[in-house]
Structures are given as structure tokens and as C-alpha cells.
Amino acid sequence: MNHKKQTRKYIISDFITAAITWFLFFNFRKIVIENAQSYSLVSLLKNVYFYYGIVIVPVFWITLYYLNGYYRFVYRKKIPNEISKTFKTTLIGVVILFFSLLLDDIVDSYKTYYISSAVLFGLQFTLTLLPRIILTRLTILKIRNHQIFFNTLIIGGSSEAIDLFTELTNKKITDGNKFIGFINNPSAKVSTFETLLPCVGTIDKLPEIIKKYAVDEIIIAIPEKDYSDIPEITSWLGFPDITVKAIPGLNHILKGTSKLTNILGTPLIEVSNELMPFWQFALKSFIDYTIGIFSIIVLSPLFLLFAICIKATSKGPVLFQQERIGKNGKPFFLYKFRSMYIDAERNGPNLSKPDDNRTTPFGKFLRKTKLDEIPNFINVVKGNMSIVGPRPERQYYIDQIVKIAPQYLQLQKIKPGITSLGQVKFGYAENVEQMTKRLRYDLLYLQNMSLNTDLLVIYYTLILLLKSRHV
Image (cartoon, rainbow, N blue to C red; front, top):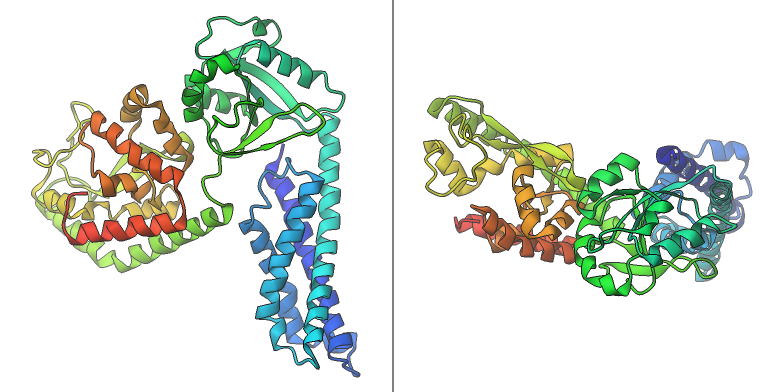
């Protein structure tokens, strides 16, 4: 499956239909609303505002659709949802365009505003929806004809899992599932499921299994007596662009919102792992990038000053880089001002402490004021980190934390951050035990993610920095 190609089809379709809509609506306004007697196609082509609209308005619609999350899961679309989403987004967009563009129109009465808005809504909704339905319908047909399929992993090896697999594989109209294997119940030893489907590993290897087999969908089929296994399983879920479904009965245990995926066919509950609305994620990324660029520019004199001080007080590079684990378990190099002597970890990984003799004299100042973290903004601009998010750790320590608290891996659903609720409430951790204690605050942030929460974390981080407290 080529997700980018499929997404481009929807974007191009939406852009073209938005441009056609504006062309028709512009003519409607001139001929009907303004009743321009001398209006013609020639005068239209000479109108500079027409050209502004034919480009800017479609871009506005594409942006609105993107913020609404329309271009996600492009192979999972259904026609009823297409109608509903297109209607809602068009209504919002027309209201925005009305107050930004149409309200300045010279009209005889307010009735003209209603007519103008209704025509714009009707054109935009109809012309946008028709090609969307065609694209979605063609995709559904390809799924049913086995031209498009989803690599599917079943978690569970009991009779419930076997019955579910049998039912899904015997359906006359396929949902596109291509079963690559199953993971047995963590508490179970053996399963007769292996006669039908290969066992591809254990739950603790789920990230590796997903990468190896390019898993698109996970179905959890665990019997009620094994519900005790659920907390461990949910700790490993939350991968992007992977659909998670479960047999009825598990939806009240699994974290996240859920919805029924099929009325007439096999009843499965689809679990949503969205931590906050997509538009907030998009805005959060924009804010991160903007603050990152601004901070690097404004703090550039400090970069130069600290570079001179670091070089003058100890041997070694100005910037210290270390591999950390980011979103979805992907490693990246974290940048900081070097505050320790070179080869500080020649005897292996070792967390820093307030009285650490590996720290340089100037490094002690940097660590106390937290100014050694300034180069983290480079990571933000590169897209490795966010302003707010759990602090990134090394794989060496993550392996130790997961043995005590497997739910730590839930933090890998999002980008790590320069500051976090864990930093504000707990501070820096000096050992694995303290990392585990700090984890509860980062999980609390995960459960309450929002732009408002980010603002509060940033505010209290600045307060603590101004008070020169250890955070």
C-alpha cells in the first residue's frame, strides 16, 4: 500500500474541487448577488481578487481538512463517514469564509447573506463529496478483491481467538485482513492455534514484530478469565497508523475511546489511542517548531558565549550528543552543552548527581541553571523532540525501567520534550528507582494531554527556573 500516493489523490481532488467551487461561486456573486450588467469572462480574468481566491481559498480548505485529520488512515475510509465528515467540515469552513470574506459584500438585505452562504455550502459540499465517494468506493472494491490488504496480528491463542480467525477468514466479503500470525496469551503456555496460524513471538517483542511484519492492524482476542493480562498488553499498544481492535467485552478495560466497527458482520470494537484531537497535535507541532527557531535565534549570543567558556575551561567539544530513544522507539541524538569532562562514562552508563566529580567547573553552573539544555531546541527544530513531553532516556535505562514498570513504553506514543510534568513535579532522576517514581507524573500528562496542559507545564517550568530550584 502506498499511503502517500493515496493521500495525494484526496488532496489533489480536494484542491481542484475547491478551485472549481470558488470559480462558480465568484461568478454567482457577480451575476446574481451584485447584478453586474457588464460582467463577462474577460472581466473575470482581469479581476486580481479572482486569482487570489482561486489559490488561497483551496489552500484554506486543504488546511482545514488536514487539521480535522481527514488525510489520515486513507485506506480505512467508509462512505457514511465521508458524508458526515465532509458535511461538518464544510459547515465550519463556510462559516469561517463568511466572516472573513463575505461579510464585506454590499447587499440589499441580510437575506442575501443567507443565499450566498447556502450556495457556497451547497457547491463546496457537493463538489467535494462526489470525488471523495468515488475514491473511497474504488478503494473498498480493491480491498474486497484482495488488491489491498492489511497485515493483521492477533493477540490471543484461546478458542475465542481461533473462532474469530475462522469467522473472519470465511467471510464472503473480506475486510482486507491478511493474517501474519498470532501472539499467545501471556499467561498461556501452548495453543492449538498454531495449526492454523504461526505464533510469531511474545508480547514483550511486540514492537519488533510490528516492524518485522509491517503490521497494519492488531486484534486482541483474549477470554474474560485472562483479563489480568490486559494491563501489560495495553502498555505495548499505541503505535501510529495501526488500527487496534478487540472482541466485545474488552472495550471497558482497554484504554482510550472505542466504537463498533461492524453492525452486520463480525462485531469488533475499534480502540482509539488518540491522546488529543489531531488539530491540537498539528498546532502543537507548529508551536514547537516556531518556538524552536525563535529560541535558537534569540539565544545565539549565549551559544557563542558558552562555546567560548566551555572551550576555555576544559578540553573537548562544545556540544555533547548522546543517543536517546524518541517517539515510537526510534533513536536520535540529543544535543546539550557539554558539562562533563571527556570520557566521563568510560566505565559505562552512569547518571549524573549534584556532587558529580565528572562535572567541569563551568558545567556545574550550566547544570544548576539548566542552561546546558539550550541545544535541545536544535532537536525540536529537527523534529526529534517537543517543547513539552516526557524526558528522553537511553535504551540502557529503558530496559531496566520496563522490567519494573512496563507501562513506561506508553510514553513512546509521543515525542519526548525539553520539559515535562515529571520534571516539574519530581525533578531529575539519579537512578532507575527515581525514574520509575517520576513515571507516574509523565503518565498523568499522557492521560491529560492538551495545549492548555502544555502551557501550564511551560509556565511552572519558567517559575522554577526563575526561582533557581532543582527541576
